[in-house]
Amino acid sequence: MEDRILLLNASNISEELIIQSLLDVDKIRPLIIDIEPDAKSILQSCLSRNYNSRRNQVDASGLMNDIHFIFRKLWMPGKLILFDYDLYDGSDPRSNWFFGGFAGTVRGLGYITLSASRLSDKIHARDLIRHEVGHMFNAPSSGRSNTYENLGLHCSNSLCVMQQKDTVTSSIKYAHERERRKARTYCLQCERDIANYLPN
Image (cartoon, rainbow, N blue to C red; front, side):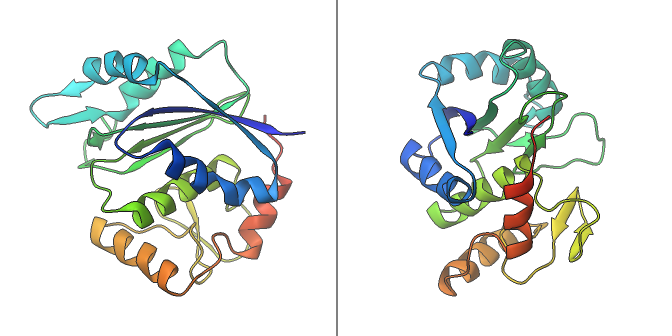
């Protein structure tokens, strides 16, 4: 049985690059990718409502609430949502910014939000999409070896895309190091986590 992902792209990242980024998961477990043709108009109202002009950023927690309200009847497909606005977490007073993240739901695959505002190039964008999609499919899983907690559970295996980098510079450097060394996307442990994941 295939998993479905609904792509809502209101970013400057091409749909071709986004779909290419999903192929590593598709090799592990088949995916059907549906593209929302009205993504820009749907997302623009949500982004505008949650835009903080003092910070010149969008509050991700409010954005997720709005998006969940719009798609609440469409439970099962995962939602991959991309846009160009910079993000912060309005529920965390310490939040300066973040690339995006994954939010699970009680049913289905949950939501990924990803801001393209700090992505440097295609290599960097591809790895961040792969990273968040890995989280959608429970990589790395809790109770597993070679993990650490840093804004969620992450993998410590060498060159795995599921490692967490805390700065834009370290994130770009890591993506390019993985590309230069032709590293596999997911380590074998994360591949097993993805293959064995059962959506809610």
